[in-house]
Every structure is written in structure tokens, then in C-alpha cells.
Length: 145
Image 1 (cartoon, rainbow, N blue to C red):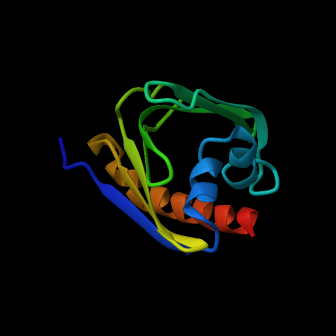
Image 2: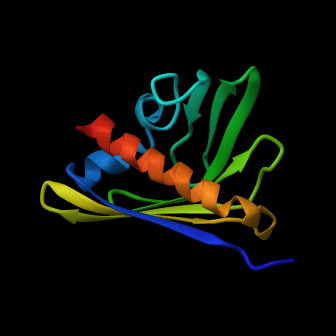
Image 3: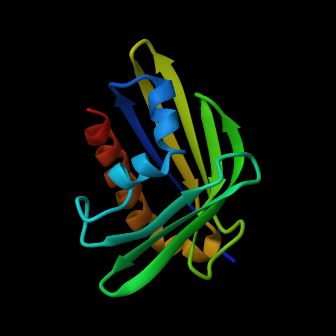
């Protein structure tokens, strides 16, 4: 088994840490910056959250006629500084990868650092994952503007 790859995205966002943090837990906001036809060629089927430690999320979308279910479980919720959750797609569930979002308040803006530790089996997807999270963070910045 190879080493678990880790990707990192850093960005300063012109919004408070509280506002950015809350966007990651609100299905309405998830539909504004993470999924939807306004971002890419896909349709949202459903976006649901149980935003508490041990709770989970299911983000179902359809792309090119195929339904994809993004799922995870919240491990840490420390508003507005740190959010940690597992990340899986369809049958790839459980602790296969872990996403950590760290926010540092800077007055009316904040510094965001997203780290995604992938399962070693996903090593070949590290570059694509980096590009995906970079786009999502950019879309979050646009949605918050």
C-alpha cells in the first residue's frame, strides 16, 4: 500500500470566519458553491446535513445521467475555527479520506486552509482532487461576494 496523499488549498476570503464556517454546514449554501447546474453540468438531487459531531451528510447529484452520492461524517465542529469530516463517494464510504477546514479570523475576512488526506488507494486522484477543492473554494468566494 502506498502512502496516503494529502492536498492543501489556502485562500483569504473577504467574509467573516463565522459566515464562511456556516456556509460549509448549510445545504442551501452547499448548493451555491459546491454543487449545481450554475457551477457545472449537473443537477442536484438532494443535499442533506446532520451538522453535529457524529452526524453525517449526503449530497446527491446527477452528472451525465449518473447519480453520485457524496457522503461523510462530521468528526469535529468547532465554530468558527475548525471543521473535520470524512469524505466518500457512492460505495466508497467510511474513513477513506478526511477533510479538515481551518479558519483564522482576520477582522472582516479570514484565512481558510483546507486539507484533504486521501486514502492511499486514491493516490492517482490527488491532482484532480486538488483542482476540485480549488474550484470549490473559488466558487465559495464568489457565492459569498
